[in-house]
Image (cartoon, rainbow, N blue to C red; front, side):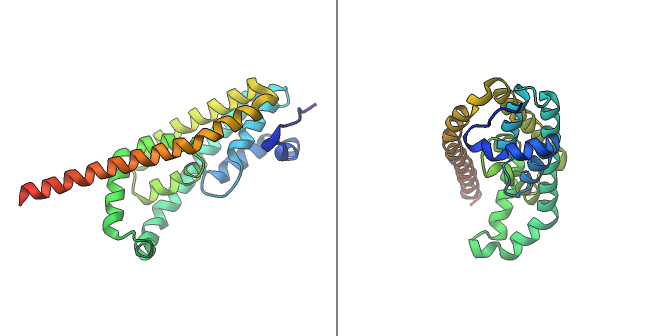
Length: 210
């Protein structure tokens, strides 16, 4: 018999009971190219079910990994084919001029690998990182490598923790989620610092050339 899922995972029980692995793959897949869906929570819920013998943890991990990688690549394709034109046409209304966008592209090309890997663990960034990478012109093979690394770490962490923690995962998930906002703030500060350093160097070079 499937175990009762705690707290924020409880509403996913009917989905897992009816569709099992298909639910895991579908929800993780659509979340990863920007559709609001509980990809992380269904992965955790599936891990709890696997710990109770209702699902196979290896299959859960493999399906979630491939769904995450494919979903992010759909996001990358969306950003690569339509994002640039959209930004150039409408970006000025949010003060994102072509010049600023070009600087953002160069920054992402240089530091994008770290961002793509870390983004997997941050709500909001997890859903958008493929689109951002595609829009900024990050090379696809580079994106694929770091995206696969992030997906493997993300799936491995949550599937394993849920598998061994069982119904206690609710408390663990709440505690970790509480610290995600601090990770996001720290990441934002880091990115701002790197951008500021780059701008200062560019300004110094211009002064030296004058």
